[in-house]
Image (tube, rainbow, N blue to C red):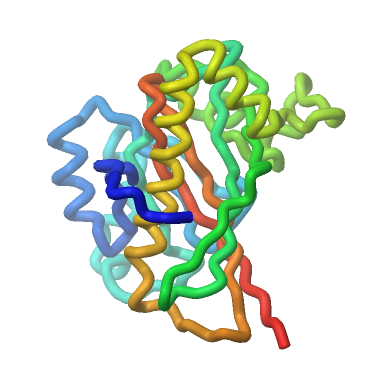
Length: 234
């Protein structure tokens, strides 16, 4: 993966940590009171504990003096602006899981695995207020979707990255597909550069990351989350 001089502006949704950033979040919320936000516990995985909000009283429990002090990691939550105009295929929301191997941070050397995949919801997308609690609409995690009656264990609600690219090229054109994937590569590059100086650079260790990317209806990629895996070599 090489830098090509491009920069994808604003590739991370506006995000705060609760309870530490509660006051800042309230200010942002009041500037755009009709926005939806997604709240995720920092110490859980597979979609557990995630919920959507559109009213401040849904997160009032963080607005107490005791919560503004140091709290255990299990009680820390991340709240991000919800991408409510996702690109849909067959009327359903999906995201991309892409894998990146970092063999060195100084100098930065990273490799993107060619065969990522798209993870699909089983229920047609809706951003109606009445559907905020329907996780089958909003969360692509297989751990969530496998409990839906429409879930297929044969393909697991997934598309290969290759098939997804074919669809994008056929629907929006080859140039649009090429730009979209180059933008994703630049998101990976700039996100790694952002942490380059704080990462331990050990020649006996490499890092593998799972990047979760969501596309909006303008084919703009947004970085949702990065899962980390480390391995040691002799």
